[in-house]
Image (cartoon, rainbow, N blue to C red; front, side):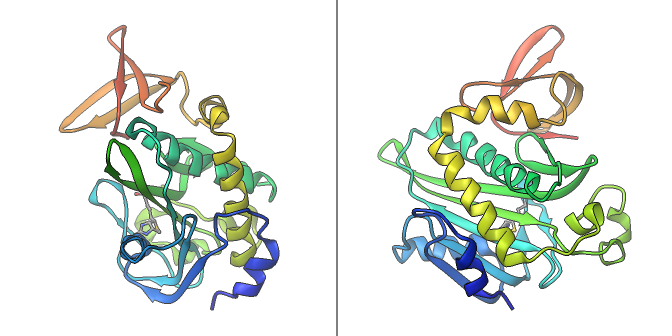
Length: 251
Ligand code: BTN
């Protein structure tokens, strides 16, 4: 069971995570977050559960997690920024996680748009959705799933060569409450320093200037991942031509 006191002891933010809604069990923290937005939840509210039963991933994938072993949470923000900033928010969330993990001596990499990798295996993912009104992003839900204390035997066997956890990498069990607070602290810091996002993201990118196979819409293309546009789009050189992508998946 998530201990709110342990979390609050580590939290140093001004607004993100000061309001936290904890549920022992939820279908999806993202779904709950949108429900709370409709009930006027505060800016920066964090929704967390020990046991997410129907987690959603990108590209209509499912996000599976073992009760009490990982972090599954969502953050509600009302940023009032232009819609072209949406990609930046998911990049920021990835950076907040790498910033936090470095303090645990864990060196994670980022795969565009928002997978968190350790030794080329996925340890976490981010699902970021927004609502636009009056030409600005009124609300964003950043949903984060991070595999923390799972042992290798607890991950489905078919995922052993693609997925990992912080425990598998470091051999140490981490306290979920402190880890969450540390991620939120870093997230607020990243939001306050949004101008550093693109440069820092590229430093943590797992595939900068490398050949990638990219799945976008119903097409699969090969090219060199050259970096990010000012709006956080992927720039990929395909047949010597730079092409920008808003969405897609490196496979
Ligand atoms: C991905 O890599 O496909 C994104 C996974 C995002 C999973 C998180 S877990 C907390 C939040 N609630 C959800 O239903 N999904 C996100």
